[in-house]
View: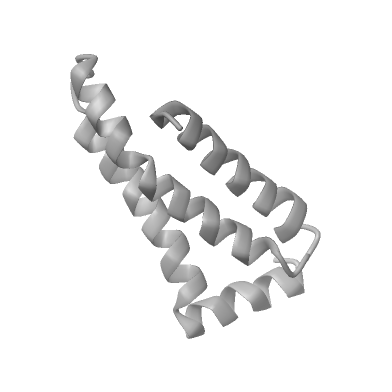
Length: 94
């Protein structure tokens, strides 16, 4: 899978996880969000290499921003206190 395909798959999983799972309060949304974030991390390396070769002016910044977003998903869903906070807000409809 090239960088664009992996990024697209990760984004699609994240979007579906939020809209179909999170907002409908389905139990599987957290797993899908974690898999999507992991896929997002995996595709950052080929993206960085391809963007650098293509002459993109600052691919490192794009990689940093995406990595921070993926890290945020991991922290919110893997740190128990934060995961409970997220789950409580989802169940409460906030």
